[in-house]
Image (cartoon, rainbow, N blue to C red):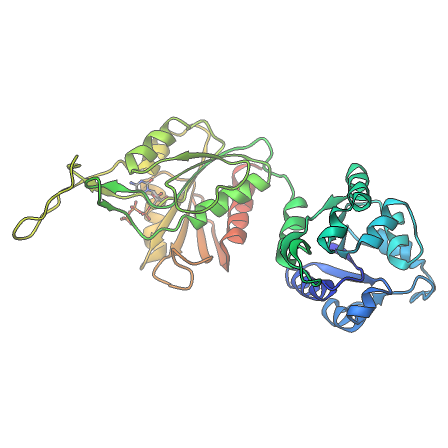
Length: 392
Ligand code: CTP
């Protein structure tokens, strides 16, 4: 996106340098406007160096005589962010005052503006400030609320500018294309838990992060998402329907009852075996060794593959060797439309890691490599390829 970043005169202006860096690193093009007060805290130079664009500070200093900058910058940008936003600039915007480069650009700007206030908590709570916030919310400005924490004045209260990473995540999520609207997507995630007795169970090393990232990405893109998983300690993404299960049998039942979907993604690491017998009371230790007998669980993906009608079925393959051979074997054996294979033997992208690297093997022979990146980015890529191949 083309992003216009306004920086006003608060101590958090230094964080706007980090925000510029993060936005550029994530592929955005950034141009910065600073108020005169902002220059009391930081200079234009770091913004210029990081954005590799001139920084705008003076409405009367036209860097290109062929343009009126406070108009042409607004035409250029897709969105505008003001971070940090002081009480003074907030008041000016609320009342249509345009006595500097930033405020004049805001008045001429016809697209979405995001405001990240930062000020002392007493100022923030002041009725004048809160009235200005309400006014601008009603006009469609979006506020990225300040957090609680240590303020420059020594208070520990609400008023700290939201962290650059959070601001970036907010605008990314808000501007995401809702290309899965109307789609019903079922995702299974994480390990299963197979009970031995009230104290012990069998499980595996899956963290659930890949499946939860898929649920988050699909939901952000407008899909109706149902997530079937054990409690893996991750927050269920907002808007996602969560069916909490424990065993492979529970997961099988939940999936079977919810087969009416456009897309089914089996990211879960399902136990292949469960104890043949579950003990009601804690097993007491005896002399000698103990032999535990295990029986096979239902292969849920295979069941889906055999009973699917129009669903696009995505299976996963967690492998430590011969990744392609095993993944292609599972594609056929389980009648999936695609298998997403990952090498869980590689510690840098394995189960507990926040990153992953996968290869998608489609039924028609197509192979797509998705290089190492965050599991959320991988999730978006997987969904884009599924949409492209399955729902033209
Ligand atoms: N799967 C499933 N039900 C099972 C076992 C696996 O639905 N009882 C699904 C997984 O969710 C995944 C795919 O099948 O989408 C492959 O799982 P994986 O554990 O990689 O392979 P397995 O089928 O268990 O085969 P193997 O243990 O031989 O690798």
